[in-house]
Each structure stands twice: as C-alpha cells, then as structure tokens.
Image (cartoon, rainbow, N blue to C red; front, side, top):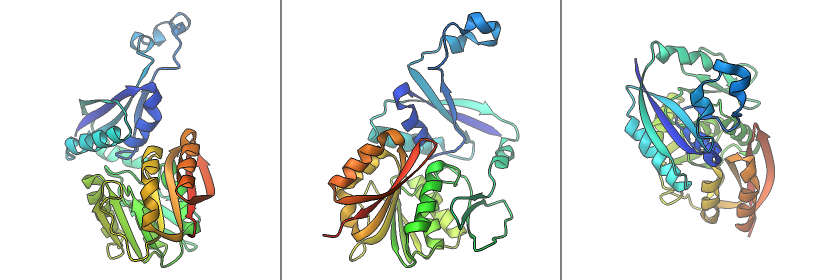
Length: 309
C-alpha cells in the first residue's frame, strides 16, 4: 500500500503544541528532536552516530504522521494550517512518499480495549469484547480525527465526564474530533449532545462513529469556528467539554459562559502543564471556579463550574 509521510517542522519551543495538534489527526507520531544530542558524541561512539544527526539544526524539531492512499492529504493539510494559524505556529509542512507493505493491518496490534474510567471501555471496532461488571462500551475506529482513547487527554476527560455529568444532562462538546467524548457522555446518560469542530473532516468522522455506537439520535454534530455557530438550548447547556489546546480554551473563555447554565460544569483539557495557570487565570476572570485538576504525563484536565449570578 502507498503511504505519504506528512512532516511538520517547527521551532523547538513549539514542539509540544505541534505534537498535540498532529495527535488530533493520528496517534502514531514520529518525532525528530535532536536538541539533546551532544556534539562530542562522535568521539565517544564513532560511526554509531550518524553525521546527519550530529549536524542537525538543534533549534528545529519535526513531527510526522503517515497518510494512507485512500485518504485525502489535502484535508489533513487544511486542518493543520487552520490549527497552526490559530496557535501562531510557524510550521513547514512537507509531503514525502512512502511505500509500506502490510502497514494497513500491522498497526492494529497497537490498539486494544482500554479502560478510560471506572465504567467506560474504549474498544476498537475490529475487537470482540464482552462487557462485564457494569462496563459501558464505546466502539472506535482509529481514523483521521483525534480521539481513540489512547491519548492522555481523552482518558482524563472521559473519567471526569463519568464523575461530574448527571444522567439527563444536555452536553456541549467543543472541538469534538472523533466524537469520542460525546459518545461517552451519551452512553453515560446524557439526554442530548451537541458536538462541534472547526474541521469538516472531523465532523464527518464523528458522525460515523456516533452512528456505529447507536448514538445518532442523541448526538448532533456540526461545523463551528469556536462558538460562532453553536445552537444553545433555552437556558443553556448543563455540561460542557473542550479537549483542545490551552490557547483555544483561553480564546473561548469570554464566550463559553453564555452557552452554559449557572452551576454548569465545564471540563477543559489538551492543556500541557506549563499552560495550566494561564487557563486557570482566564477562566477565573470569566466567572468560573476551578473544581478539580487531574494530570498525566505532562497533560492536565481542569474542571470548572460556572458561578451562579
């Protein structure tokens, strides 16, 4: 099968944010970061260290994913350009041809059922899995949209949805990606979920995943640039999630309150720990009280509650 390497090169300071954005398209990231390679290693290890690595520009780093031939890489590029522009990331995007035999099936061995909370289990579409002990099954087909349950931010938010969302809540999912968080909410008893993303490809994937999980009657997916086109129910949403990146969460902060009822919980994630305080400050300024923060491998998710007027 023909594969195309989609490679993004940025300044080393933007590596974490770039990897987070690339992870929205595919979890199989190849990261090239030579900033820690010492120039004197050649004298120690001889020919074991390639000259190209030793001479690489230490101020730059690259993140790559591999696009299968049946996917339109132009959709990927359009998505990346939008996200990088929003985050003010100066990125060089390259397409490099690659022929990888049997890759289309070999990658599946890395995806197995995974518990993301006390009850929720994310199961790949091709896996047979029988629920036990009250488990709630969410079936996912890893595709071009972010969210298969393997990323830390998805797991953190899924657990918080189970903890804070009430049965019957009306839920807003901003930056839905694959739709996984809306599906989790629906299967845990949400009465309605409005799932939005700026990327039409992500919305299409989310709709497909909702249908495969039997949640299409509860979850409605749509394209929205931030919160511009969100249809807010009378009185506002009971609950909201935004698993995006810190900068976008901060940009949403002045407007998200108008979408929510007083006392509503709002879960934010996709935040690297270095940006945690920035998000806290922005949300506090808009009348939200922090309730809980959970962390994993340098990522954090923060639960806020809209204060009563």
